[in-house]
Image (cartoon, rainbow, N blue to C red; front, side):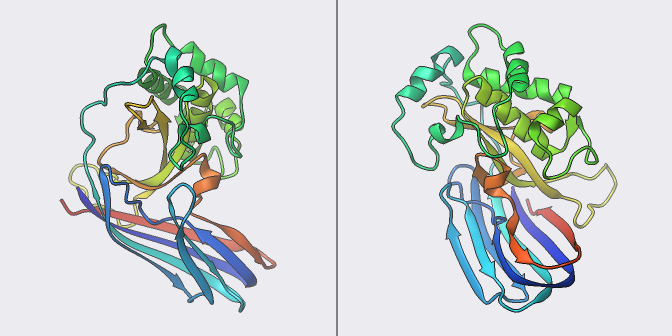
Length: 292
């Protein structure tokens, strides 16, 4: 499937903001395995005095920019065309969960895709005894890593309730788990904590998910949203698989990858600093149109 994606993020400040320096991570990846970014542009208005487009450590496209003059608004517009292939058959070769520590001990890779970067607690996913216990409760003797990932994902989907009002972008994973509710970011952070707690390398994936309107209804412009799901390492032969705990299924042809990291802090769409007084307003709209 080929998708045309348009993302617009707008900020308005009560009073002009100065010394704004920002980092944006919204450009879809060229993964080389199931996803091809055919074209992509990121427009910033007003035009910043400095701009640098580069790859970060994990291979994600990021744009750094800054303003010297005061600004009362900033608008980011992404236009991209992406080819996303449907997921094939379930990959074979996943090692047994009991054999995973030995497989990790043999790994000497320290590159961006190394599973060793995704084992330890990270900024937004600290170690949590309750989430580890939850994951261990759904395991069965002799499980493969892939089967364990699926079991944890299915169990969390049953345990958690999707509720956009329950959490904010800053809500800790432990708090969302205790409330048993949240959004895709919370579902993903909780699943990552569960998997790391049982020794499975797990990371965070940000991207876009194509939404389908009810039968007979037109698509709504801007109805799609940025989404998040989980990737887990299942051994040297299988490698990484991606699971969407919010929707209780493997990521497929309607999931477009933007960035991969240890947690949301690595791949936040926009982060940075500025000096201002008063409040600010932000708006985001995503449109993901399938072209066939």
